[in-house]
Amino acid sequence: MLALGFATFPCPACGGALPATMPAGLRFACPLCGRQIIVPEGVGPTAAQAQQYQAWAMVHGTTQAALNDARAPGAAARPFASTSNSVWIDDGSGRVLALGAQVSESRGWCMRAIDPTTQAVRWEALQGSHFEFCPETHAICARGGRVYIGHEGQLYAIEAQSGRVLWKSRLSARMTSDPDAARLVGDEANLREIGPVILVGTENDRVTAYDRESGAALWQRPVYSKPKTDGSLLLVNESAGKCHWVDPRTGEAKRAFCGDARIVAGGIALAVDDRGPEQDESGVAFVDGKTGAERWFVRVGDVDLDPGCVCVGGELLVPIQADMGHSLFPIDPHRPPEPKGFFARLFSGGPTTRALPWAKHHLEAMFSLGDALVVAVRSLQGVPRFAVLDPKTLAVRHDSGEIGDGVAPGLRIGSKLIAYSFGESNGPKTLRMVDPANGRQLWERTFDDLDEVAFRGTVLALRTSGAPLQLLEPTTGRTLASC
Image 1 (tube, rainbow, N blue to C red):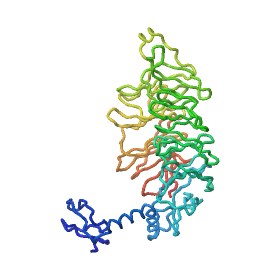
Image 2: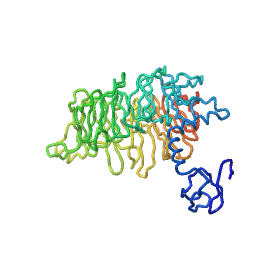
Image 3: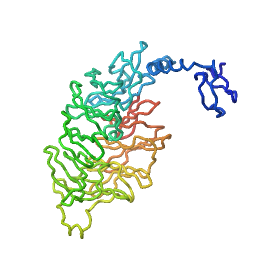
Image 4: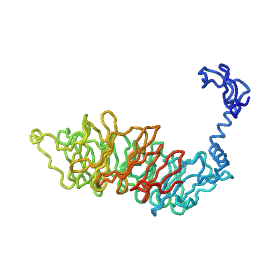
């Protein structure tokens, strides 16, 4: 029976036309009447045929779908295959390229870089590859003039300006994503360059280090959470509550810390419990990043380094947790406060902290940019907001106000500007650009959807599923190019 342009069979319960692509014997609820039915014999593939097709589709389905789509009228000019996940990359010289996968009629895949101003192909790499699935967006990134692609068990390093493949090395499992890192680097790839070392996190709860020049695997360690690095120092959590300061080149642990730790101001800030003669004091300590010596320890309760720890305006700002929200404890890292005796602490109260401008709000993340403190906060009722504050007084320079809590890229930190986006999960997204020096909002635009926002070179790069990649002029929001 042919209806609706494809083979169908009548529902045994209501007679409605159902697609004859399901194997005989399959039990399911009819989408038309809701009753449980069984697909009769002779109207679709057998179970063995369905299994055979499924096995074929897992290996060749992406390629066949891309080829079929490419043969459609007007599709020949597409720069990437319809099944590709395309991204924006910085080639290391300030030029921004669109990168995605393309397939040829001979069924061979390649990764293709497009110049968005001319729409010309800049280069192609990995020609003739077989992809069961196209590389995922979180497994593609540009770092230090190179493109790294983690796909189907291999890690590729490609020269970003020429497309020359420098090396490939085996991955122990699929690359994981790191959404928090996107605030600073603009992508979710769990890959970091630390001097001569490439560090990659994978789904088997491992982190592997590779030599940047040769791709040789150097070492591997188990991880409990995402590694932390400033491009020089490296912290790896191998279990809850225990952190190792690791040599990036050898993987050897220089020192182990109990409690949370963050890299800041060329050293390591530690949330410390059970310190002092009676092992009942808590506070924050600072370890020199060169010598490993502890510079100082300051008594303060309820230190919470989850939102981060920043050095701005000559002060270290340490988040302090309370039931009704966070406050910030300022410390001069060069002249921390002298420890108080028992009676001084008893009669002078706790340490002096700075309250957030909004009552009953928790910090989710904070960053320094120039002389500004940039924060993401959430009320006790779960309502988010972004703001730019004066670090000394916490006076508000810019406040997003209460914003939508749908899925959106959120906060992005540039070299001089910040962008943030928000909206409903299945609705439009608002994107704003702010100058943190004075808190002035430069522009605002609304998009049907947004998957990624990133500062790339001198432009702002946007990515949205099912729509062209776009490049915007950061200070005006004007669209410069699309691909």
